[in-house]
Length: 272
Image (cartoon, rainbow, N blue to C red; front, side, top):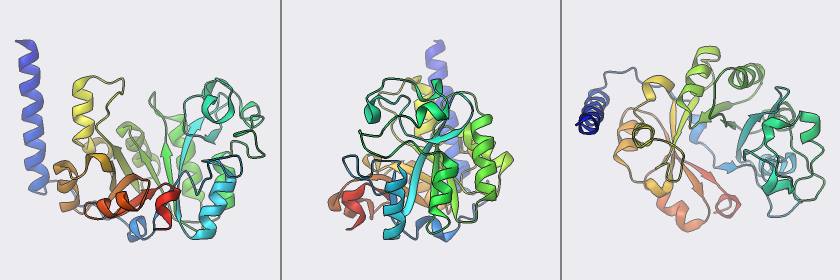
């Protein structure tokens, strides 16, 4: 009985939220047009080997030179420095199976990316290199307690002289950003969350974008494998641009163009 009641309660919330969105009961977003003006290089314009690995300064330089906007991922080192890295641990890119948040920034930057000359950059180093040449989309990788990481990202982007936005799967990270840097555009990331260590109702709420009242996003970034989606269609009706991720080739780009306003692309789709 309790499970049935919980399911009915969630269903009622879904229906109520859908009606509220459709009726435009919430404030309209005012997203800047630059969010969708260029293709977005997913972790930079990277190479498969050590020349310009993903989320490296070399990959960002190549993307900026080509005129692409740049998406990058950030985490915190153990000494509280915001570093640019996607994975929770360093094994895939460095061969050393160590959690990013267990090492100092000095220790992290001693690790070679794919055995080459590139090292894990800090957010400050990445922003200095990009220097406002193209827009930057900073994805906050923080599944835990919000606060220190978000505050540091907010401080750096507020001082940055260039077009910059933040994204996160964690709506509470975005809520913190709205509090400390409301001028920085926010994007709610979402997917089907298959394989994620989340309860069924957490997946439901996140997939259906029902926590947007918390994150108050200016745009949505959604897995193209899940498009078309009624949840993103409602968001677009409300004026929130939709970015599709991650597009790997021309075929995926052509399909995404039917459903999305902007495109987060791997190198194979950037020159299409």
